[in-house]
Image (cartoon, rainbow, N blue to C red; front, top):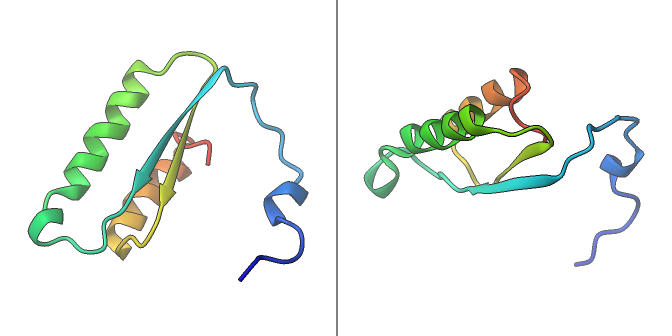
Length: 86
């Protein structure tokens, strides 16, 4: 089914910093067992590395799709600290 209406993000009155490039990280962590047992450590290492090497004008976007509550909480912590642009 096609979406109808207007994208709410387009209506938001937010001023974004000018970026020269954007790093987009898709994250899929449905559970923290088996293959995904150390996923939170991997996400943390990835984002901490990006923050440590971030250049002016670089934006970080995370697309969390189907993540478990623990992974979402970790990502929300980074968002609250202002690490993530979107």
